[in-house]
Image 1 (cartoon, one colour):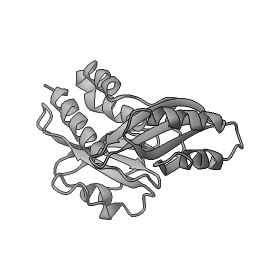
Image 2: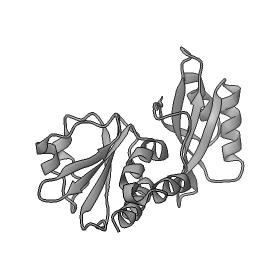
Image 3: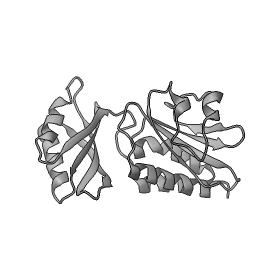
Length: 213
């Protein structure tokens, strides 16, 4: 049973090793650990993917993390996006390999790259429309689509019925002259941090620049 763990820890040599050792000692089978953000205050945000036997509670692993000085668990939840975590470079390689479908390939990769539950791409024009979405993405009604605007993508006032923490990034125009927004959702959390939004925006702009050149 895969779980995703997001932790804050001192950004010093050895911290990741101590975290991995503590999780392993607590019975977690570690699949991957990735750095999400280096902060100016001397701390880092890391994501860890680990597996537990069916029925085993994750509480022991939280206790094991908190036993390390300076470590704070920010989030822990079941992880449904696959058995691994994708790196940014892998995602870029995936959509550059198919430039005519770059935005679709990006949407498909967002859940494993950004640890989200779903993602979709919306063409921003006079009648906004969904271009591509992952299987778990919610169905957006015409009313929801009408609330999406390139100049205020952080406003999700029209999305109240979707149980998710949302983030979005808008691209530059595609080669066909259409603006596109990538919207990603996490059910309940954790909140998207600045570095995640910046990475998503950068990838969206790159994918859009490749498509329909």
